[in-house]
Length: 257
Image 1 (cartoon, helix red, strand yellow):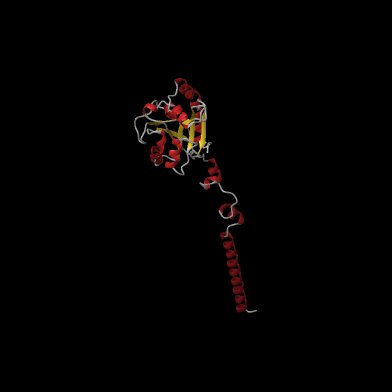
Image 2 (cartoon, rainbow, N blue to C red; image 1 turned 90 degrees about the vertical axis):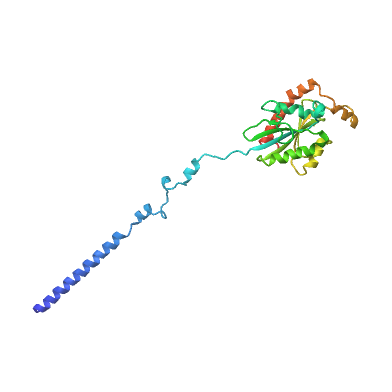
């Protein structure tokens, strides 16, 4: 082989070596630029199987640790006593009027009359408040007065509940009867309220005044319009008041439905 042939062979070898070196360098570059599987699994959110609590403000652990800030449902009770006004305030028919002031938490009922009659704050708890209202009309026409007070009350109080405090012939003095809705049982005051508030839910608390032996209408009328003796009033307050307070609490807590 001549000198020219050897030169061409040497040049060819150098060219091949350069091509091989360039190919090798290219492979190293592509390898170093691709992240390893291990790197992806620890840095890529899509492939990670665990999440650091510090990296997510809404992690399950944080949600579970948050205290329950929900507030109990507050029920607003309007307790209306019905009876007769004036000279008849101390009769058996006005038993509700006699007991109502004893439920006030601030002493005598106020002459401030937003609902048309004396009012005052009554028993309250974590889930209920009570507003006392004394009707100032005659028993047999209680409906319009109670209806007016109720419609005014429920526009400004959450979850309103209407409770009527009345006299109850079918229970002896000191006993108390609770009834929700149903018939008026011949009680003219309750009948008037039902007629004025059709469809409204009524919680009724009846204060025992006893009844005469005769069922004659005139005899019964005379009986309820007679003054309640001092002893009967004291007995009603001593024995009946705690029962009424418990009933209000049960209504306010949703136990009496």
